[in-house]
Image 1: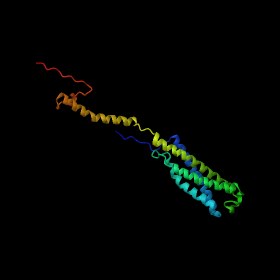
Image 2: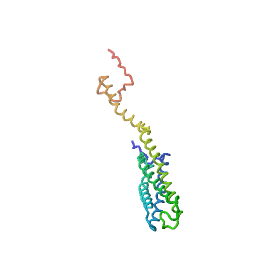
Image 3: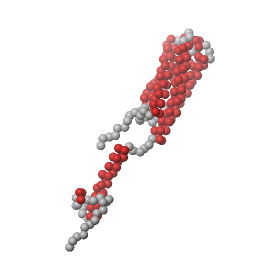
Image 4: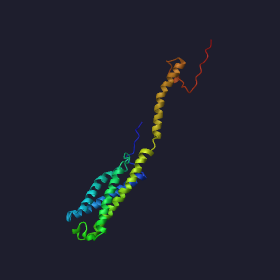
Length: 209
């Protein structure tokens, strides 16, 4: 019998929602990284810009691979604490951006040599906030996926597997029934075609004198 093929991907609503959140977080991290590289290549490397750069670069590498696992069948949801950690890091990055660009004169803040470019600075702030929201949403989605895969997934075999198991048991049980029938008839050399199963009663014929 041909082997049953297990699907590689699982496109459930929960997994697709997790994939969307992780993909949006990755895109936001890439945008923040690009803005930070632009500032660091032309202006002074301040502490907050360095922090944004480190977080966005790590986020880009980690979630560039992690988002691909969300729709694979073998992935059972083990990234809850990872998302919680990144949500805290992105929240800190967002707070730094808000302090720099919303509580002072934007043109003279982080980096002050930029000579304005407030639109780019506000973009950094916005996408840092988007990355925080996505990582925050990914944590409960990941937790829910873990619960579904480990506690709510049914363990009942598929119809094809159940049928194969029944046929396998019947194949091994048949010779034992035949042997029992031969013992009852006291005829061990009887042919298989003449053997009656235990479910079919067998009556001895009276011998005529």
